[in-house]
Length: 185
Image (cartoon, rainbow, N blue to C red; front, side):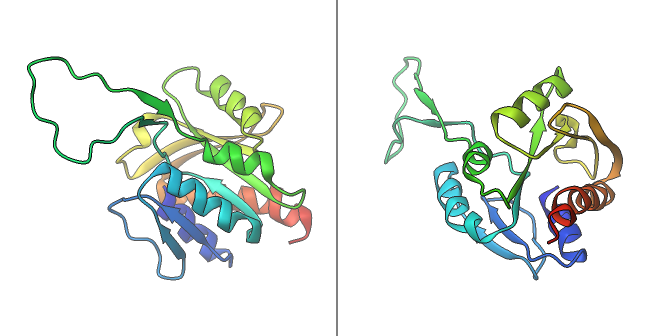
């Protein structure tokens, strides 16, 4: 979905800056790509880059948790259960949304398995997003997607189904009209 969104934004004439973890996709040559490996690195890169951007589309699915301790070498079997202690990672979209300037916008993605709209609206509010895209797990590793674009009041601005390319183009048109042209950019 990220590749399709980048291509759609480029088609509309936007400068595209991508912060990407290790993925097996090829981003458009015209996009400026910043590669990271961890959620913490992604957050730092986004915080560094976001001030020079008009907005952010948070389509990535970075890890929600990280191990408290990372082994520097292979862990040998002991015959005993292994206990992993995890801590939550910082929420990148929420951090950017909370610190956005009045002339910036943030659009988040909410991939949910149940109560999709309700949970997406809760995320929209919690993450200080201007709009939220709600979709389900069937979008992963698929060529198609089915999404709802949600407004802060919870209303469905658009229900879009189709190839990820078509969905991205329609989403970008909505974002362009509702957030970019609205501010005269």
